[in-house]
Amino acid sequence: MARRHGHYYVDDTCIGCGACDHACPGKVDAVYEVAGDFLGRFAIVAEECIDCDLCVPLCPVDCIHDARNEGIASKDGDLEQIKKLQSWAQARPQAL
Amino acid sequence: MSKPAASPTDLSPLPPEHAVPEESLESYELAFGQQMTTWAEILNDNGERLQAGRFSLHWMETDKANWGRRAKPSSRGMTYADTNRVEPYGQMPEKAEWLNFAPRGSVRDPYAQRMPVLSAYDVVDRNELWAENVITLYEEAKARQWNATRDIPWDELKSLPEDLEKATCQLCTFLTEVEFVAGDFPAKWLYRIPQDFLEVKSFLATQLMDEARHQEVFRKRAIAGGGLLHASPGFEWALKAIMEAPSHTMGTFLLNLLGEGLVLSIFRSGEMIAKTHVDKEIFRLCLQDEARHVSYGVMELKNHLDNVPDRDAALEDMHRFADVGEMVILTAFTEAALIEPLAILLGGGVNRIEQGLEQAGALWGNFIEEYLGRCRRAGFDRSERCGIPTQAPWLQ
Image (cartoon, helix red, strand yellow):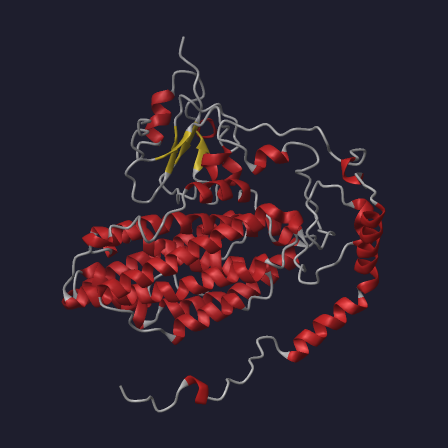
């Protein structure tokens, strides 16, 4: 059985304001600043996202999307498709 | 040693300085004299109690207090969101009625009649200042503060060829000039916002700090590279239009959404514009700050339009304001003192200014597209009415 995951992803129009970063529940902390990105953009770790939707209404440029609304990832096992939608973002930096 | 022409004892004393104009002091005395009955009663009561050796301990009464409801930190620490979850601390009025410093959620009703009123607090409608993301932006702002003295590798700054150095210093002169208004505007409005909107005031305080740091870093960069170059009347008119905006929402739209949006577009092109790794680092750090300001501007306008009693009238007012605002921003954006150094930096030298101008045209197109997108996000569609051409004038 596929492991559960979230369905939200950030597109590359993110301006890096970070409003989503602190909206993500602290114990989840699925939003991260993309390492080495000159524009300081943020992305979401789909495996950690709990689909709470708290970040979406705070985004000033509508760059956070629910893949399910786009006919993608409507069922478990579609994690790779969601990751492709956020392929502009590098992997989350390892914690020191 | 010969005697000096005049010793200190021979000199006449300096005329007394009047640091405070006499009429201002008289007016202050008069105002407090007229209100003396209220605060003098408090002083009298205090004096009697102390002389009688009595204790009040009224402040330990918790009947009307929200005592015992304790906020719990989240894993990130204790944020305003965490304390606002505890009733009633998060209850924000649609219209602020407490025009003094009494904290929201404190026991203040019993003292209403004896409280002073500060006439400066005149931005009392929540829909004139709130943004749904203001609390998280405040947290982000605190987490991302940096120091323009120590966090920039100034000792690694290398001299550039003269044309590129002058272009860099002119761009920094422009940025220093505009960052002044970006600090003064929130300062002008911050003190007019009542304490019940403490989250907004806190965020605006971070914006003030950000802009102080920006004018500092660009001033330092210019002086380290040769010097500040030309101020510009075209910039000044745009900045004046921001400072004199008739409402907080309108000015925030013009400064944060449009003006800082333009500056953010320049910073986001920093990898192409900057000619040294030191300049790239300056742009990188500044753009993170600017992104927060743009973010607040978009969401503040959205909140305003979503909550005003008459949305159509508010939209028309905003359009009228933007008709003027876009033209004055265009005045700045077409100044030679901005476009030409940008083109020289993008092209790679004064002999490639034409090629650089083409790239600046692409930057212009991106900026307008982003600006119109942010307006749409706020529910303010400017696509049919935007006074700034979607294509740079030199490409038309």
